Length: 126
Image 1 (cartoon, rainbow, N blue to C red):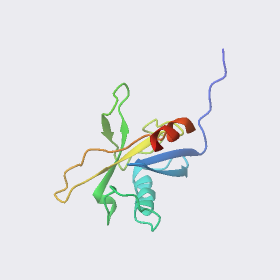
Image 2 (spheres, one colour):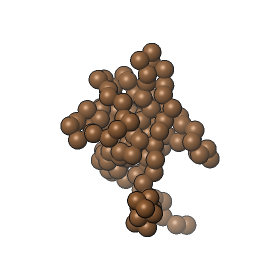
Image 3 (cartoon, rainbow, N blue to C red):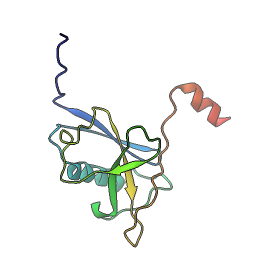
Image 4 (cartoon, one colour):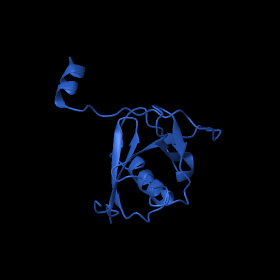
Protein backbone atom coordinates (compact mmCIF):
# COMPACT_ATOMS: atom_id res chain seq x y z
CA UNK A 1 0.00 0.00 0.00
CA UNK A 2 1.49 3.42 -0.97
CA UNK A 3 2.22 5.83 1.88
CA UNK A 4 -0.41 8.47 2.56
CA UNK A 5 0.39 12.02 1.57
CA UNK A 6 0.81 14.24 4.57
CA UNK A 7 -0.99 17.55 4.80
CA UNK A 8 1.35 20.50 4.21
CA UNK A 9 2.17 22.55 7.31
CA UNK A 10 2.27 25.73 5.22
CA UNK A 11 0.11 26.60 2.21
CA UNK A 12 0.87 28.92 -0.67
CA UNK A 13 -2.42 30.52 -1.68
CA UNK A 14 -2.81 32.71 -4.76
CA UNK A 15 -5.43 35.45 -4.72
CA UNK A 16 -6.20 36.85 -8.16
CA UNK A 17 -7.94 40.07 -9.20
CA UNK A 18 -7.85 40.94 -12.90
CA UNK A 19 -4.17 40.46 -13.88
CA UNK A 20 -2.84 40.91 -10.34
CA UNK A 21 -1.96 37.89 -8.19
CA UNK A 22 -1.20 38.10 -4.48
CA UNK A 23 0.85 35.24 -3.02
CA UNK A 24 0.09 34.44 0.62
CA UNK A 25 1.93 31.92 2.81
CA UNK A 26 -0.30 30.65 5.64
CA UNK A 27 -0.97 27.58 7.82
CA UNK A 28 -3.95 25.35 6.92
CA UNK A 29 -5.86 26.61 9.97
CA UNK A 30 -6.11 30.09 8.39
CA UNK A 31 -9.66 31.29 7.83
CA UNK A 32 -10.98 32.83 4.64
CA UNK A 33 -11.56 36.00 6.68
CA UNK A 34 -7.81 36.17 7.38
CA UNK A 35 -7.05 35.64 3.69
CA UNK A 36 -9.46 38.49 2.89
CA UNK A 37 -7.55 40.73 5.27
CA UNK A 38 -4.31 39.85 3.45
CA UNK A 39 -5.95 40.54 0.09
CA UNK A 40 -7.36 43.84 1.40
CA UNK A 41 -3.89 44.91 2.51
CA UNK A 42 -2.53 44.20 -0.98
CA UNK A 43 -5.47 45.84 -2.76
CA UNK A 44 -5.10 49.05 -0.73
CA UNK A 45 -1.30 49.26 -0.94
CA UNK A 46 0.50 51.85 -3.04
CA UNK A 47 1.76 49.03 -5.25
CA UNK A 48 -1.74 48.29 -6.59
CA UNK A 49 -1.94 50.52 -9.64
CA UNK A 50 -3.55 48.12 -12.11
CA UNK A 51 -6.40 49.66 -14.05
CA UNK A 52 -9.73 47.93 -13.72
CA UNK A 53 -9.35 46.89 -10.09
CA UNK A 54 -12.01 48.70 -8.06
CA UNK A 55 -10.80 50.70 -5.07
CA UNK A 56 -11.94 49.12 -1.80
CA UNK A 57 -12.17 50.67 1.66
CA UNK A 58 -13.11 47.55 3.66
CA UNK A 59 -13.11 43.75 3.46
CA UNK A 60 -16.90 43.95 3.18
CA UNK A 61 -16.56 45.21 -0.40
CA UNK A 62 -15.42 41.90 -1.88
CA UNK A 63 -15.62 38.12 -1.51
CA UNK A 64 -13.04 35.41 -2.07
CA UNK A 65 -14.20 32.66 -4.42
CA UNK A 66 -12.91 29.46 -5.94
CA UNK A 67 -13.69 27.91 -9.30
CA UNK A 68 -16.28 25.15 -9.06
CA UNK A 69 -14.77 21.81 -10.00
CA UNK A 70 -15.68 20.81 -13.54
CA UNK A 71 -16.92 24.32 -14.37
CA UNK A 72 -14.81 26.73 -16.39
CA UNK A 73 -15.85 30.15 -15.09
CA UNK A 74 -18.37 29.41 -12.35
CA UNK A 75 -17.35 30.41 -8.86
CA UNK A 76 -18.32 29.58 -5.30
CA UNK A 77 -18.17 32.31 -2.64
CA UNK A 78 -16.16 31.07 0.34
CA UNK A 79 -17.45 31.54 3.90
CA UNK A 80 -15.19 33.80 5.97
CA UNK A 81 -15.45 31.50 9.00
CA UNK A 82 -14.19 28.41 7.14
CA UNK A 83 -10.53 27.46 7.19
CA UNK A 84 -8.35 26.32 4.31
CA UNK A 85 -8.27 22.85 5.85
CA UNK A 86 -12.06 22.59 6.32
CA UNK A 87 -12.68 23.68 2.73
CA UNK A 88 -10.07 21.17 1.52
CA UNK A 89 -8.34 23.86 -0.53
CA UNK A 90 -5.21 22.67 -2.29
CA UNK A 91 -1.73 24.04 -1.80
CA UNK A 92 -1.13 26.65 -4.56
CA UNK A 93 -4.87 26.91 -5.25
CA UNK A 94 -5.99 30.13 -6.91
CA UNK A 95 -8.77 32.09 -5.21
CA UNK A 96 -10.52 34.91 -7.02
CA UNK A 97 -11.66 38.31 -5.79
CA UNK A 98 -15.30 39.15 -6.49
CA UNK A 99 -15.91 42.85 -5.93
CA UNK A 100 -19.24 44.35 -4.89
CA UNK A 101 -20.88 47.37 -6.50
CA UNK A 102 -22.16 50.41 -4.54
CA UNK A 103 -25.46 48.59 -3.83
CA UNK A 104 -23.64 45.55 -2.45
CA UNK A 105 -24.39 43.37 -5.46
CA UNK A 106 -21.58 41.14 -6.76
CA UNK A 107 -19.71 42.25 -9.87
CA UNK A 108 -18.76 39.42 -12.27
CA UNK A 109 -15.24 38.13 -11.66
CA UNK A 110 -12.67 39.36 -14.15
CA UNK A 111 -9.39 37.48 -13.98
CA UNK A 112 -6.94 36.47 -16.62
CA UNK A 113 -4.49 33.67 -16.07
CA UNK A 114 -0.85 34.51 -16.79
CA UNK A 115 0.73 33.06 -19.93
CA UNK A 116 2.12 29.56 -19.57
CA UNK A 117 5.43 30.33 -21.27
CA UNK A 118 7.42 33.26 -22.61
CA UNK A 119 6.30 32.66 -26.21
CA UNK A 120 2.73 33.60 -25.24
CA UNK A 121 3.95 36.97 -23.90
CA UNK A 122 5.91 37.71 -27.07
CA UNK A 123 2.88 36.89 -29.23
CA UNK A 124 0.69 39.26 -27.19
CA UNK A 125 3.17 42.15 -27.59
CA UNK A 126 3.21 41.89 -31.41
